[in-house]
Image 1 (cartoon, rainbow, N blue to C red):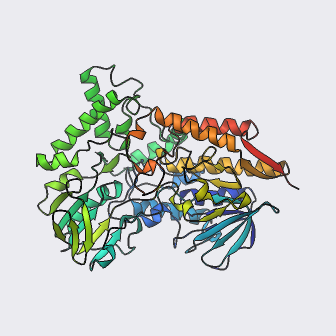
Image 2 (image 1 turned 90 degrees about the horizontal axis):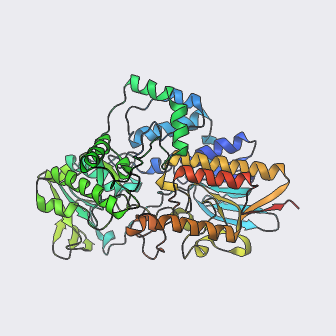
Image 3 (image 1 turned 120 degrees about the vertical axis):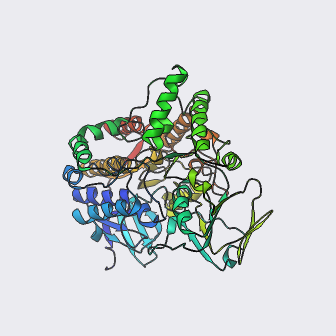
Length: 536
């Protein structure tokens, strides 16, 4: 792979779902594009997260690109919720089919992006010595891409193997005969624990905060189901773009409080059996009314307790600190049943926190656990973490991470005041991870592509979000979040898992369809809220 081109229209950072589509869409507009990707291949989050059991919690038929009908018709998903290897194969197929790989330099990390006010261009440098000048920067850096490895005292003295779910060895890892500790019970912990338990001699799960998880009810797709899905794709996508979360799903319009107890139970049962995150949206008011949420939570608690043999273990596994759905509901395959196995022990860190890691294992405040391998399932510095690690300087040398110390400021989750021609995809201030990330990425990239075309057609050099437009937008995001139960949880949506990160709900909680309408209105009004500056 040669050096990057020195001078292009657009630099795209990241070759995941958003970056691949940005390469395709912007090239299709006749723009020259240079992409950079830290990994050795395409796939982004799905390239790095190779831990056992890694799968998506949106049905694959929906968690896939909609921009090309031939692509939709030719690709066959093997099961309802595809696992990581299949999602990665799909993204590699898309890169090959549309010839996108040659647009990226792989194994290359962007170190800085600096705006030159005189030339109205960005200068982007990488750890491989590239220095590229571009008119536009598109940061497709992902929401869950910067791993969070807690700095536990003595961590580096451990003589065994240390793994992180978000940066798993490509060859896999064999836990056979090993004493294994898993720290963390978020999505990656809950998905990997049942599979690690099947291999390991002993498994200790170190749980900081218990999480709600709904059975995925995953199943293979047969040819008839696939044909039916493909035949209905146009309507399925139309509904998805209008929906709250980017899938063709309409919640029950009623309040959980206005139906009879029997109807409510039947509806909860239906969504529990259907599997997956949609249980969190069984009724229209489940994420806004604590009373309605308590009813859903009670149902989930009964389901969880029913599959765990030891009531004391069930007590430790049932969350009591947040309304259901305010942290991302996890989807699992046999997670709670894993604690019925003889080789699995739950270590409740609320009762006795980890004091240190030493050469032979983990020391809590009341016991020592001898281990051969420790898995950190401790998640990510989400949503802003990847941007914070790049030296991004806008007008007047302003440093992005310093501008965001009190919380991110964006307009529409796309533009940033003081940073002309820099765009974030599915970043803070957008629905982001609350929606189907594939359709959300397409929506943003299409919008950014149209804005660039508008600038070029009208002799304009730069588009920059106005500070007052961004302040109003973030205030609206705050108001929307305040109408929900989301702020009641200490979640990564609020940055609560990262020390020193401001506690701000970083996403637009008004629904994917509503958001799409709002950004379409902004474009139709001549990109209202952006300062458009003519070329000199």
